Amino acid sequence: MDVLLFNVTTAALLVLMFTCARTLVGPETAGRRPIPWAAVGLTAVAVAGVAIQASWHGAMAALDADPSKTGWWRGVTSVFMQNGGVSGAAWNIVTLAVIAVLAAWFWSGPLMLALFLAGALLPEHIDALLGLASDSTDPRNFAGSSGATYFLAATLAGALLLRARAPKERLLALAAPALGLALWFAQDNGHGLVAVYGFAVGALVWAVVRPLRQGRAVPA
Image (cartoon, rainbow, N blue to C red; front, side, top):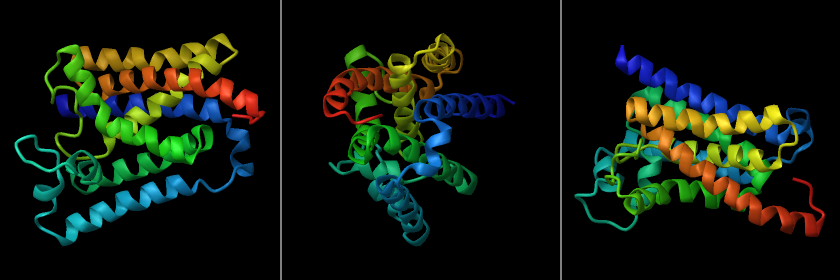
């Protein structure tokens, strides 16, 4: 029962952040937007990671982020290893694809990729800065794309907070880190704290990017 509750609340957090992202991008504009090739490429790499796992027995040992092992590449390659079985891998890839598309449309492809990479690498360093255990907030358990995906989704909620004009949209944006913190405190759910990190980074990045876009007259 505890596992089911954990999975349901974790999924609810992502649905909430998806709603923020959809509000930010504008569902009515989807048909007029270009193909987000960066998101397509990122998803293809995630699918390739699963294919490598299926065809190479030693893939997880060689590419995961187990801190007892050496390898500078593990922080990145571990994101494309999945450890939740078939259903978990499918969920991670589908949610990554959806969030990456929305993020590419809003942030641009290169910035989306940079924020996804930040979601893979930053949380453990923020943990260390805050004095938290290095693996306490890592929802990947040394492998999996969910941590980076939740971080990326939360950046869109952070941008929505600063960009929204309607109070209900700001409340929607604030609900994402609020639920994230609730999951962290109630369940020790690392997805929640990673979402808080992503929210803060998204707000900061939008505060920097927005004046640049306005100066170039590029609509977000």
